[in-house]
Image 1: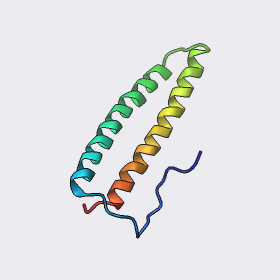
Image 2: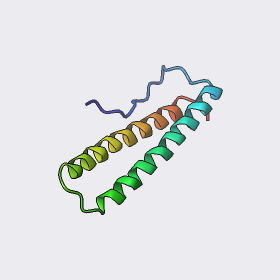
Image 3: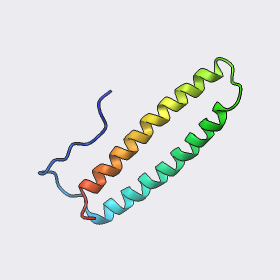
Image 4: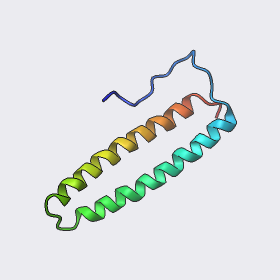
Length: 84
């Protein structure tokens, strides 16, 4: 999988401020939803899970970790390509 971290492109157009605000709100809400999943995964990890449930939890954790990195990259991209 490729690195989701955006590379600054000085020639890239800026995101219009009203659109950037809306995308920031959505990224923030996504981060909130992911945090619920992270906390639930943590609580599940304290339970005595047996296979295959333990494997499913590990898969969940891996997917959430990827989603968190993608969301962080999205927020960085917006910050670098919007006026504020």
